[in-house]
Amino acid sequence: MSLVQLESFVAVAEEAHVGRAAQRLHVSQPPLTRRIRGLEDELGAPLFERTPRGMRLLPSGERLLPRARAILAAIEDARQAVQARHAGATAQERAINAAAPL
Image 1 (cartoon, helix red, strand yellow):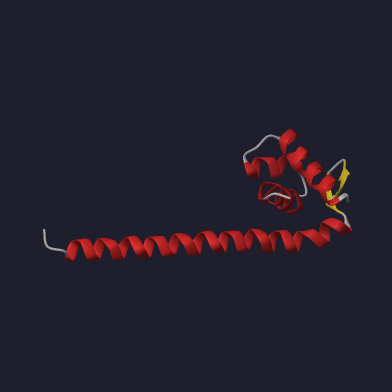
Image 2: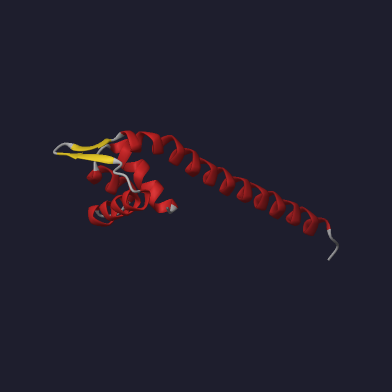
């Protein structure tokens, strides 16, 4: 299970439509559909019911959705923490360099 698959799953679940999710993710529909099918194959369970009007989460998808959101939120939190720490270190380095005699 990859982060790309989880991002794709969340987008389709939230949009309830592969086309809208594809636009949101800036990908075409076929690769997005392959990601979802790959995730379903890996998990051994269908996550969506495909309907003429779009996609509807099945109980297995409903169980995965809050966990997928939590994983993606944790990744984003880690990214922001590292970037904030790096930005702080960079600002500190600039202050030290500015105070150092030439």
